[in-house]
Image 1 (cartoon, helix red, strand yellow):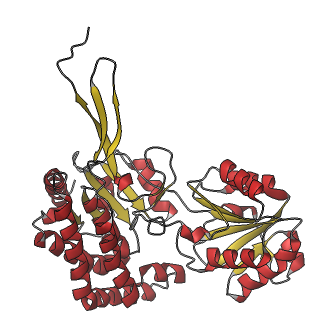
Image 2 (spheres, one colour):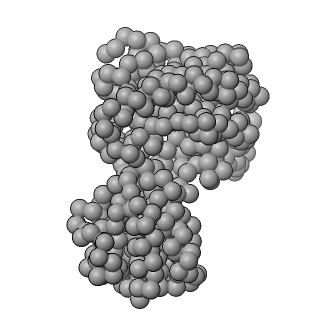
Image 3 (cartoon, helix red, strand yellow):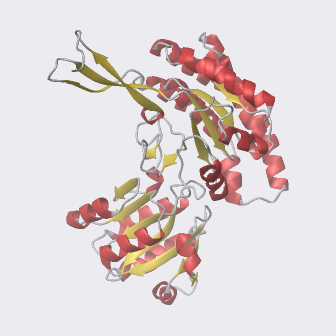
Length: 416
């Protein structure tokens, strides 16, 4: 195993112990100093990103990948603002989650505490560096970040700002570290737990990365395998609302995990079918549809069985006409990834049925799937969307990055 990574893990473990006891004011001071440093070094970050972008474009990568990698003034400012938003959140550490008293007089409290050292493995998005580092800091956890090779220079420039903020606030800069190699063996080393120093792994990336993490990790994992998200347009949907939501859910940003990949339309609402298809195609989206969709618009390409379970992360969508909400729910159960699904309808009873029976981490009524984002939930930011059912589900923010312990206060009780 790489000796440098072992040292990194050991340093992170030491930093985590002190960070777990750091007062909220000190953690917030570090977050604000980080935001200030990112703004002060915005040009350096942009130059590093320009270097990454030039390399990525020379490899002829997909446009959706390039979009995830790209930084500009607005996205750099959003990173800084995100750190400030995290600082403004209530401290998740030390929260009283539950309290009760036993008949023998013992008082039991369940208290939120940090997890420890969290390893985050991600691919092209440089902003994950700031989001992950900030969220781990606020929740009292040390972070070891392993970004993708395509965004290495960008992430390196950002991590320098984060460590500057830690130092200015009097915290151990090893609380947020970045793996200094793009060698894939480093991922394997992290998955083993770096000699017992990593408590949790969080992957953010494509299906192959997440599948590898889930298969090989020897420590707990928060992850989602893929975001196959649906929008179901019900028979009672407002046509203009449906058109607007579908367009936003698919095309606002096609490369995010909350982007809709399949549109389902009730067979008794074919009046909405043509406008929705036209709106998507006119916006530059390729529509792959069933026979009903193809008969409605000759520009629709034939859909295959594989399409229903494909996360495109691109300007491509599959479209199916279904016989009502029950058929939509069955389709989502068969092909979805339990990530994010939405219904558009004016019928409250139908909406409640969908919200209750669709077993996904996030289920929406009359809203775009692109709201699958921790910032939009008021979490300040997120490390990812967890689609598992243990501990954390949905956006993973500061509260989800804590575990708990029991504190028991007695007055001399002994057990008979």
